[in-house]
Length: 359
Image (cartoon, helix red, strand yellow):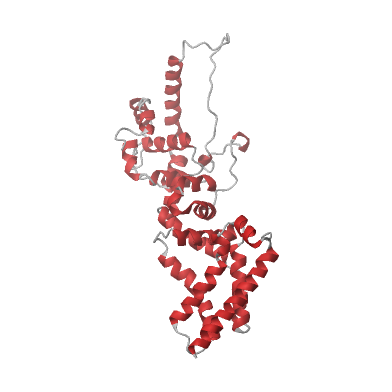
């Protein structure tokens, strides 16, 4: 494990900190400032510029996600979005102006002997005119000078939603153990600190992903199970399940997550499993009990459920190319519908046979 300074601290070591403090003292900057000093503010904003943070919330999330390292980065004050916003809006800009002049003078001495390639009579300055978006609400800079003009601060719910959608895709493709938080954040267009801010850790993100995927997975068809005979409800149940297992995009992610959890159980979603899956299972249990009759025992119901679900799950466990080879047909919606009707009829006959054996 690395034991030395952080990269950020090494970069900040090049700055003349003593002269920065002189600039602060010149304007009595830290008068009545108890915790979040001018130097803390400077370090936070320097970090935001170097890592291209996009908002005050972004700065807060990223820095607070590594609290243990803040002291070693030189930041002694508590990092809060409201504190940074207040400091940016109310503190004396002349301190940073004077310090900028000191840095410019230092840079001129360092590059005095470099060949510019042109003979000019006056001094030429090359300045980074980038405006940090997080300053947008505090400084009235024209939007034409912005790299990414900000019209409105992004809602935190949108970031959370993007993270969940990206997590659905990554977890569905790679499973929990092989998925990386960095890949999820890259796909969502968010920083890694956002996961810590909204979900605490990877395990909590996985559990929330299950809930999110299941909510997308729900469809009105299951409400039809309330009406009709048990035989008709069984057919609707099987057809709906087969339809869900073949869905693409966000609606189909839950099917893949479900399969990944069956193949490699994580033990992280027991609560979510009972909360989300059990209500749906009870609907199928009721249908099976009605078909078997009054003498239906729990074990027979569970065996019948297992038989039905595993027949439907063939669309998940066998590759589509292999399934088309076995069936000698293209796996289109019409074939899936006929397969669902066959599974429903086959299962109904099996459940009736179990019921006759009980009488």
